[in-house]
Image 1: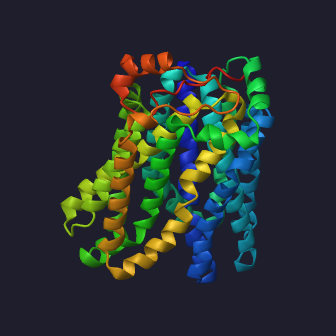
Image 2: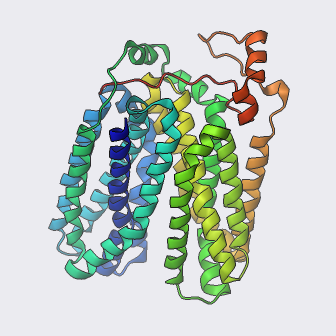
Length: 429
């Protein structure tokens, strides 16, 4: 088990390095080749557009062995990255867009695939901690990736980014080194018992719905506040744009520290409680960024760096715990789309809202997040018992009473109290 933990953390760090470089360098490269800010902005669209196909891409993970599929995806990504060596000038920028789109598809598959694969490699009690460590590894690479990318670009040009193709090959080798539990019959039975039409019912369980909804709101609001955050730094504080890099580093440090402790919090308080705390922390960070004072900006960056990953880790862990193995791939894809899809719409809305004032999108986002956290915290007793889906046993009054009186229920105080985790030893793929 400890070997698997180290391999998963290493995979997350290496994947974060490639993602960090590709989110920065191609846009600069396209801008230099074409002098077009619009074309440079399309680079980000190519990276995030595939997330809208996540439920269908996730379906592949339920119909095929997951580990071989993830290995194949990484080897294909390595081949795609090598195509960057063929870009000679503005007439080949379509190759850059194609490679970025391929990376977006691969990232969508890998994110859902790792979510589905982790329960087969780890015990249920390790999921929260390892998800937090993986988050810390990815965030830590945000401190390294910009320097790596700019160094490659300044020294050898944009085509040098193609050398990163060796990283997915290494990731594929790490996947091959994982020890996975043998595949039981439950996965096939889950696949037969829960058709596509019931995925919505499955994800409607409060144990999954609450953390995922909080993560979706928080991540969307992070995009909504981007323009206002930039305006506060460059206009209100009259600081150079490079100061945003300093604040990004502080936020990254907060994310690393938050990822190291979030697993313990999930074990003690539950996924819903951690999601609520993360959403509230992010709201505090938004309010701190409304203050035209540099120390407040540093403190706000720490709060955002801790809070935002907490919502993400809570949502992923809840999905792993409460989703049957046979549909975990599709469920993970749908969860990823729910969390990251709205940010594509929130960014332009925030860019429009900043015309009303630098603090308008920041304060509005804080209000939305605090309201979401308050709604998630309020659970009247009359709504505590979930109606059973077709084919599920109806909870009895005795079982509900026992659940309400159990130590875990009183300790967690969360919407997951009456949810029973799905089997986690799932697959030998």
